[in-house]
Image (tube, rainbow, N blue to C red; front, top):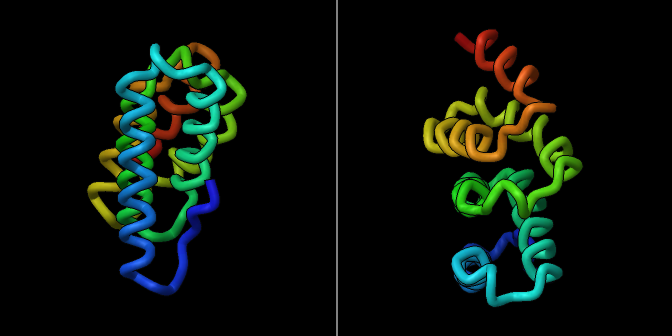
Length: 123
């Protein structure tokens, strides 16, 4: 819950590796955990997709892609939409690809028009 990005690379790597393994465990066995834990997990992922560190963003985007669409409510999708659309313009190809995968996975009727317009503008 309190893992933040610091200037110490080794501490960052060890803290975040433990955190993302815990997140992957929750996402894989979500039926066995209380719904509150899944919500906290998604909140953490939403926090980490805004981080400037590309490795952390990639891990968060990959984990967010693994979440089931019904676990993320429409409000959370709308909150993350600007970050995901902005990620399509990143110079890092892996971030662009993961943002696109996440947008595809979490797309719903309400935001589909905005996503399609952004993709058409991008093309």
